[in-house]
Structures are given as structure tokens and as C-alpha cells.
Length: 405
Length: 139
Image (cartoon, rainbow over all chains, first blue to last red; front, top):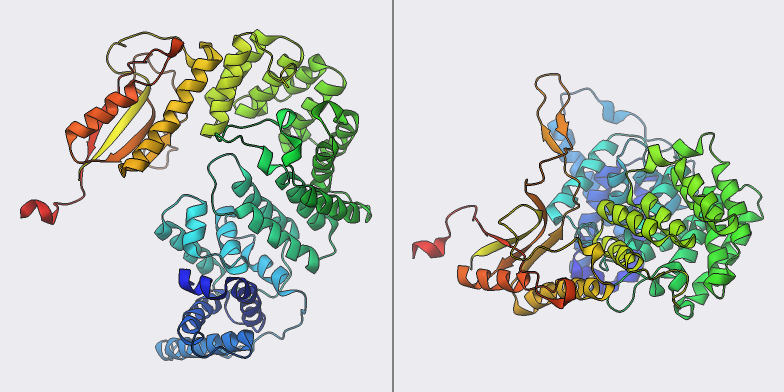
């Protein structure tokens, strides 16, 4: 494991090297599990040796030392299993793929046999180069728990030949999960959102798939608003009330550029569409200038991606209901949410959206009731407190979204 | 230093000292003051070096028990009797004495309610048991 001092040694350089060295070992036919262990040992060795004798080629140095560890490990393993049949003599598969190391490792870490939590942990560790401690902190679990999760994940991969391209859709989902974990409401954590953006950016260098660029754009366009999403007391500030001067215009510009290059391929997918919606929000100088008709058009495309959007993508239908409320009127928006009652009626967001639409309609008592229902179902404190405030304000007869500055 | 759990309840506990309506029916300023106080308590405990942990619990409650061999778990989401206990959250503190834990619990209970008046909320104070005897106790 890389500890704090190794990270200080040369954090940036090591973090770039780790996945490249690991990918090199695994491509050569080494077991992922064993290779990762060997590389961690090599990193410890580097920590000891490098301050005195810095290597000329750190990547080659790490590869050599990790390989030596692998040979040692195999020798003692072989001694143990000498009398068993010689499965080991099977030739190492030829290296055929010369794609980017990052992409290759992402496919390993996002193997479909792993549970999502394991995919996330392994990706952060093997591709992101985060320490077990940092990952544990990010997810609020004890370090021993995270260490166990990672070692179980590696055991699942044990003995599998990782020589086939994996499922890019899973990789995208895992990166988005890392992003939203870091981007959610709550106290600040190790910056997972930034890490997810970094990994997504690397991914876009390795694949032409427009959805990878769509995902990067979506992350950038949302992350740009982060500085405005909480006030100095840590209270949630909704999109319509945010100080748009706090938005990161550089991130928005990059997000728009990446999105345009993805859309130019003309193979739209959900990340590109969600990024387009985020871009329209980012584009409005004030909430009242939001181009709701165009947002609604993108939501129409989003729900059209699935055969039965109410069951398969209820979040998209709920987002569309808000857009409908702004374009066709709150009553129409509320009718849209009615279709979701069976699927989302127990989720706080469904009630919160209805509260918002009731408020748009000027029906404050109904809004208050919906916000109370939402608060009761909220699963994080910042959002719960926000919804209680909305309820109290609506109850007191003060419209929040419409008349306040 | 003993550790104590200061438990807040959504319902249950002794007869309220001062009945109050649900928080969403308070004036918005009172809601703000109440929430600010909760943050202040955690900050204060951290500053004192007495803070261990704080968590809030969502009110939805599911009781679960073993269903028997080859049977699914048995669950019940309620409705539960209005008088049953429902924990809302806690602070865990590491303090010098039981006395100090009581003092802090009373401070927590002074949180502002409607009209800025103290809530006088009952706080459940429980000592956290140690896993094994401490060597210092034997000295």
C-alpha cells in the first residue's frame, strides 16, 4: 500500500505510473490480483530506495521490481503445488491489444462479475491510485472494511484471463457513480468528483465512443456549478437561486466543447443528452432565462431511449415532468408525476418535485404538504433540512422559488 | 474517559415538558435557529475534544426477523404504535464523567424551538460499554 509519505514523494508522477505499470503486467498475462500485490510491494520498495537513488526510468524500475516479486511469489506457490498438475505450463496469452492502458485497466476493474461497490473501490485503487485509506474515508467506512472489499474484489478476478475488451457501458456507469458519490449533498470528502473527471478525461483519450465524451461533458457541466450549490452555512441553494457568478466558466466552456464533439458523431446516448440539458441550464444568465422548451425537447429524447421509461428510467420521466411544468404549466407537470406514483411514490425526490410544481402553481399549502412528505423520506441531512425549510416557508405563506430574489 | 450516547427521538420517552407542533409548522426563522443550533453543538463538541460521532436516522423503520429454515426474512414496516420509540439520531461523546454527559445532554435539550423558546426535549443518555476491562481500571 502506498502510504502518505510515498504520496508526498511525488504524488502526481506515481499516480500516473501505477495504472500504466499494472496494465503492462496484466497484459503480459499476469494475474490481476498477484500483479496488484506485487506492484504495491514495488511501491514500498520505491519509497525506501528512491529518495537516495532516484531511478532514471521510474516506470521500468517499478515493472522490474514488481516482476521480481511476481517471480518470487510464483516460485513459492509452485513449490507448494509441485505435485499438482502443471496448469501453470499453459502458455501466457499473446499480447494483442495495444489500446490505452487506462482503458484496459478500467475494463479489468469494472468486470461484470464484480458488485458495483467493488468496481468503484477497485477502480479508485488500481486506476486512480488512491490509497485504501483515502477510499475508505470517501465512503465513510473503516479502512479495514475497505481493504477487505478490495481484496475480495481481487479474489473474484483471480485466475481470470483479462484479455478481452469489457463492457464500456459499465465503465461509464462506475465513473459516474464515483462522480455522484463525490458530488452529492453532504460534508466535503476526498475529492471523488474531481477524480472521476480526471479518469473520464483519460478515458476519452482512449476511446472514440461519444458516450464517454458525453459523460465527461456531463460531469464538467455539473461540477461547474458546485461552488454555488451550498451557502457559507452549508445550506443547499437550489439551481434557480444560485449566484451564477460563482459558476466555473472554464469548466462550462470545456464541457460544452467536449459535448459538441460528442454530438457531432450523431450517436446520441443518455450521457450526451443529460449533458445537453446541463449545458442549457449553465447557459442561462438567470433562472428566468432558462430555455425550458429546449430542455423539454432533450428530455423527450431521453425518455425515448427506453421502451418503458416509467419503469426503466423513472428519473428521466421525473426530470421531464419539471420541464413540462415550466413549458406547459404546473398542472401538466403534476399529471406527469402521477404516472410515477407507483414507482417513485416512496422516494423523496418525487415529493420534492411535486412540491416545486405546486409552488409554481401558487398552491402553497399543497406545496408544504409535499415538502413535508419529501423531508420524511430524505436520506441525507442537508437535503432533509432543505426540505423542512421549504415546507416551513410554504406553510408560512411565503413563496420561495418565484418571488424571492 | 467514558463514552456516552446522547439519543434524540422522533417519538417515545417521557411526557414532553412543553408540547410543540412538528418543525415544518414553525416560523421559518425558528426553523433556521433550530438547525443552526444542531450544527453549533457538533462544532462545540469538536472544539472541546469531546466529539466522537454524530448520525441522523431517517424515520422509516423496518423490523426484520429470521423467517425460519428456507423461508424469507419476515419484515414489518408498521404502522407502529404512536407511543413506540423511534430514534432520530445521536451524538457519541467522550467525556470525563457522567456528570459532564448530563450537562451536555441538558445543553442539547435547550435547543431553540418555536418562538426561540427552549424545546426542553428529553434526551436519552446511555453509557457506551467497553469491549473488555481497561488495564487502567485494575491499577
